[in-house]
Image (cartoon, rainbow, N blue to C red; front, side, top):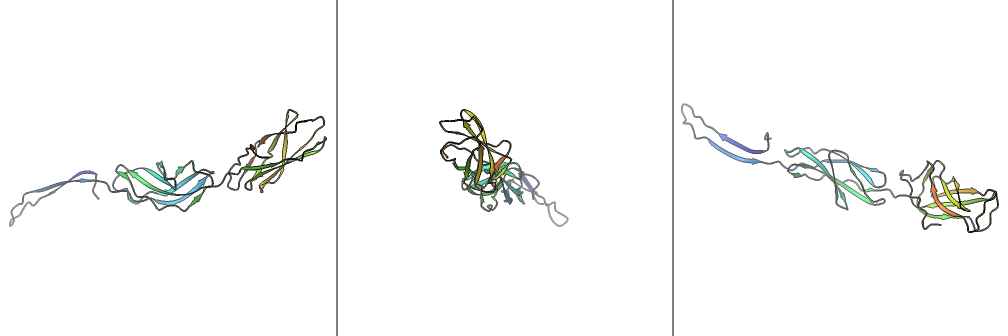
Length: 231
């Protein structure tokens, strides 16, 4: 391996000896350029939440004679490229529920190197979403009666803490407390009517309050609890 990049000069000398006359020196110069860096070894791709991954890899066996300045991760099928200084490189803004593959290459002062082999397909987890809210039957409820609600999601979730379904009764906000359903896609909430409460127009649904708890999928993805358009 040549010691440096740039111009290299080779000079040949034949000083001669007792039986041979000295030859004229011969000198030739040529440019030394770096070769392309070889491909890194892609080790694994680790999902981070619903829309990001970390891509782990080993450095290429050869830098081609020029120091590596960065690494580039290619995402397929979008062909988006993310640059990082070392392993792992984080890729953000992926779409929940979509499937991707990844490859990585080194970049040196002379340009990009060879891409690694592609990763195994990685499917991003889907975000849990509310699909419907089942309401109590129409009618009059006296003090002590239970108003029961069923929040339905598009996949099973795990509930931590005691979330609440916020209601509006007679202009006052009250909370229907979570009762059961963790591990399924149907969460039960209930509220007990207290004396003096009245609402001739019907109760209103203001939303879900986590109250320090959580509602998450098996992939540890927080559910989107928007109630607009459900019920």
